[in-house]
Length: 498
Image (cartoon, rainbow, N blue to C red; front, side, top):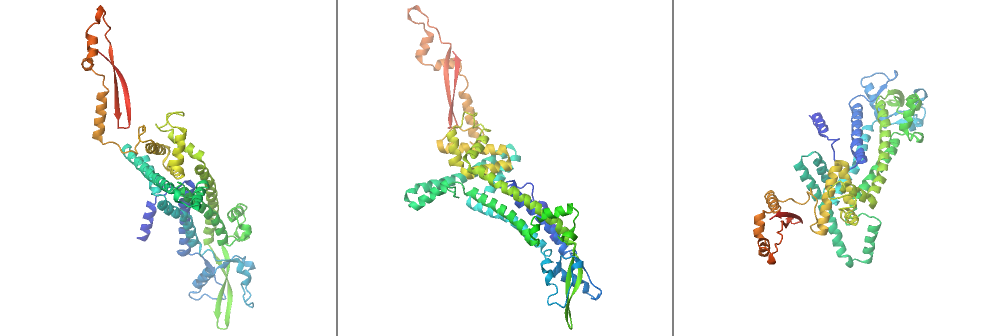
């Protein structure tokens, strides 16, 4: 039952379809690397604690009493073996400590390999846990839910798609507006602050210190997580080197072992992950105790060698990818020009942008990015683009642009397709459309003539004095103005024949 539950959990573990507030390098750390480490841990655990990890040879002089073989195997497994060529291993029982000169060659790591692999996977996942806790508690909303909702909109039908985009927009609007209100409330009490507090606020603004009021708290937490991933990956290279007990010449032991294998130098020459080791078994006799030589095979080291050579190259690659991702995100989020180009590119894909010179004012766009979105908002938009694609991101940018203009200018001309503002009820919308169509129909000639002023009717019906006949107008110009949703007016001019 336990095994069935474990396999069921692995079956439900959606590794490829995971969506969150992370980029490729983040998922490489807490997703792919953790799964690889757990797979290696499971393999070594089965070999170590289920199968036979070590088998030792018992000399003839010791005898083969019942339980003797099991005792020697367990003794050498717990006390460790020595990575010394068998021809060079000698035990002199006349000395006080016959094996003291071999202590620096003792191998004791293979008993702990399963636990160390589990610890390594935990260390790779720990920054993800800290990021989830801090971003959820301090951002003002569940930012992971925003990214997942945007990703769900990609594969939804049109009706659900619009609702999900509307939901994403509303959650972003709430988060951004909360930070805006926080900044406004702190500015309202600025006169009551002391000189030191005012100086602190200036330092925060100009030196990019973390603050929800300034809209950069989320990216500072994200950068802290990136640095944790980087430090963890580099630190694990040192950790594996120290754990396996290699000397300084084997610091890059993965590359060194690979070179040895390529050149045909096996473990008998390098004594790295030895398959055979020497063991000194202590026997207590009536007259005293002696150490007895025992030769042991270590098949577990065949697996350990392949695992740690692979892990060394893998962790090195993860460290390189993570290190390069940090300055890339700094360039994306700290530089105002990069943020402006990003938002402008997605705004140009929408109906809110009427070409390179129309529709959107450059200064207004700058205020939208600097004062409304700020760095946290731009960061979340980039995450939506990375996880959900350009189409969803452009729709969200268009909606947020409409929200910004509505808050700043009242009721601006809203582009079509804005789903952030709740739509009218269906009955009211149909009635409005019907009324506008009736108003825009050209009026009938007779009805329009009867509705015209009396002076105009006399002018048309009777000739002018003096025998001259005035020319009858051939058409009446009618201007129709219709208010659409209370937001803007459309006017149309028709010429109705009389």
